[in-house]
Image (cartoon, rainbow, N blue to C red; front, top):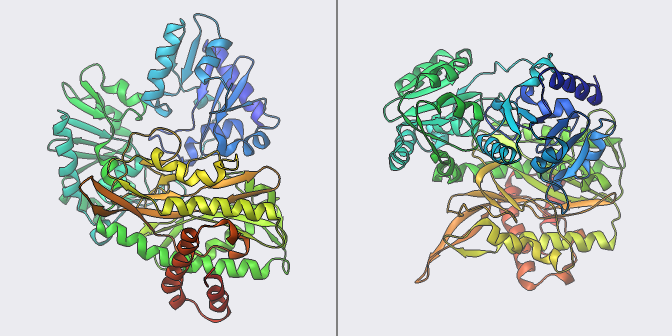
Length: 589
């Protein structure tokens, strides 16, 4: 079926059920960014493969709302679908609920799948629709349209040992229960997969690139239940969970168990799925608060911090070998973007404790680099020759930690304009890297540092500057961020984030430089405790595209100091012509 045919089938279901508009969020019951294959409903319906965005279908119109990362990609993937693109965050783009109201009449019924709709979205919809005399209904219509869904994974769940986790399960449960008590909660639902995995020091592979498994945790002040496909846990893992006081229950029994809760005060995150709220709301008190463990997970302990430092050496060695291979092979052999991504994966796979990619590598040659979350397909990906530039954004999952790195570099002649833009983006990365800031600072207050060199030229980029990164968990992790949007979460010592300013010229080139950074205590003064940022990523920048005359002495010193650190950490693991080439790359600017 084509996307157009799928939408037509959905409209038939809507007509049968007297539904005037149906919303397909990019979500699963655990509200993850990356979804198990069987929950990729929006991708299946529309053909749009981006990680963010949702579709609204009415009787005669359909629209996809997505953000600036996908403004170039989305029109290509939506072509012929009959689904219009709405650019979220752009002036004059209507809010999707306002659009639904404008396209329907009073008395209209708007439906969603409650399992794949966050409570926050449900409340927003219900509030606005009710005011305009429209109603919302939980009705999973795609069940009858997408009949050949992939079957759920049966991959094993395994233990993240203490020597890598750095904190025991009993200690984590005790800390969460203390937070529950402070909120007067007697029960707590944990539905986000990375929070489930972190809380119980377990990992899995039910979601591509994310070492998590499908499961829910229900925590009371004296009991802990894990709802999971029991076949995924071997006898040793099951025994360990029982010793730790974790009662194992079948995944499919979760909602039945919720229905038995009476007169409890239940702490549930507002971004949990609506079906959870519906299951408990009539007999219990609901406390809508963020998952306490979410912030605990974001603040890495000493073991996790050292794990990041360890894997950065392995990842840096893989990157240097890859960069040498590509720059010395291009123009001599036939290469394409997809094959280059596979080759990079191969270099990483040589490293100790490598589990897999932390996301699908972005390899964008020439104009494809301007597609912010570009994904080269195995069939028909662009040929790469010794001309212009290439952007490579990739990462690895290792038992000790997670990596995410971007480098943009020349494969042949590049324009002066490209070199100047590359230098400005690098200046943004450097200025953020140099930041010193007081306790209480939020990411939005640092975001301008990375954008200022571009802003001074009337330029900008349509994505966040930094996202949190998990410790052998999701490469995109909250609650912290560095971006224009106002996020109330303060940056704390121990948080790991990306530092990735960029600049994109549609059809010509994309530029992004990315390192991971660790928030650390710098010093305490009479004013406050001040933080600084430790750069974790170890990989050279290409000096041939840096316009030295544009840099301040402070910026030159930063590059030279960084390259000296990269040399000290990586050189002992390199040899032969790769090492010779590398030593020239990290020589002083």
